[in-house]
Image (cartoon, rainbow, N blue to C red; front, side):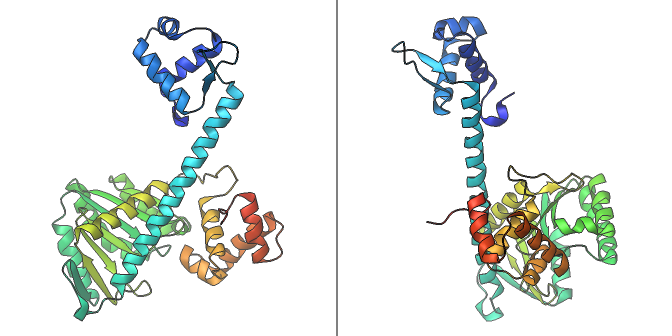
Amino acid sequence: MLATLGLDTTAEAVYRAMLAAPRDGVKALAARLGVSETDVRRSLDTLSELALIRPSYDHAGELRAVSPEVGMEILMARQQAELAAQQLRIEASRAAAAQLIAEYADLSPAAASPGVEQLVGLDEIRNRISGLAHGLQSELMSFAPGGGHRPETLEASKPNDAALLGRGVRMRSLFQDSVRNSQSTVAYATWLSELGGEIRTAPDLPTRMMIFDGATAVIPVSSEDSAAGAVVLTGHGTLTALCALFENVWAGARTLGTSEERDEGGLSSQERTVIRLLAQGLTDEAIAKRLAVSPRTARRLANGLMERLDAASRFEFGVRAVQRGWLPRTE
């Protein structure tokens, strides 16, 4: 019951038993629960680490369970801290990968190095991707930013997608949340899911990217014009970083078709992204571009958040967002 808060079944049972019979020792707890004394001691270590038990004030050498009210508050605070730490790790991964991608985007043919292959023009890019797809053995991971995709592009990709899934290749695709407003893209995603493909969405994606079998990545040189050129990356360190980036974003994304979930502050993932972008000083137009939505939608999101904090300016919004806990405090 409390597994989501960090307690396994035995530790939870020991905690409940200590609440019911505070004077029971290890031997009595083991007998009451029908488990070994070793398991009880291991559970006591877990409960101690989680601050759910404490030394008795009245009986030296004995332990007491803290009240459920205090205990659940401790567990919830711990989980919230872990979620915040995970979010920081995700943002750090995004930043590191974005820097890595930017460095490769600036490469010229003369600067090519081992593990980097330059592709120039749409024909060359598509031919290389086709060859990599033909040799796929296990998995294709992709970032597909930019909102809704053109119906003709989606239709053209169906035969290859069906062939890959038919061969048992795992396909994981990340789109932006804004594709939910595109009927053609949602229809394609539904079709792909029915064949076994996995589709999730996130508010913001760092770049367009395809990773083949965790060993080769194709990334456009320009995010503005993916047909202008691309780089094929095969370096082990580079692929490790890019795969980690994908997994981090994938873990925080939601399956297409599921309803929006809000955090304890009542914020959606899209709103949290807008807050982060506002804090970085981006304009409504720049935010719209990052979220693949219209400037009007971005302006509505930003104004709605400012109204919730009764902020008259973006500077005041930043201050109040920190006070509300929407943004981390800076030392």
